[in-house]
Image (tube, rainbow, N blue to C red; front, top):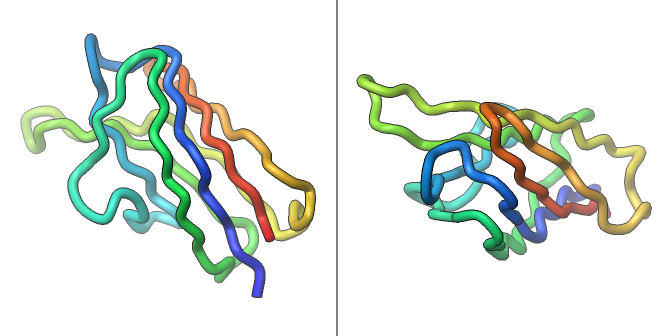
Length: 110
């Protein structure tokens, strides 16, 4: 079975001042971290090292900045599409630049 593997999320520039509290959705479902959000600041990287079954093609990877709802809804920082045809191409990058941020997610399809 084909699998989407998320390796690492690196931040060059946050959306908020200071750190962002981010999480990842795959095909609209919250996929990482298991609960809450991961705090990350400029020039930091966090390991993800998690695999997900490729249950549809393509798969949507969305990076979201968690805010205090309903006062300040969560902000989508961008979406990237992973495809089953990328299987075996090695480690790839998804860039997210919504709302002035800059994040790089490394992933592979195996």
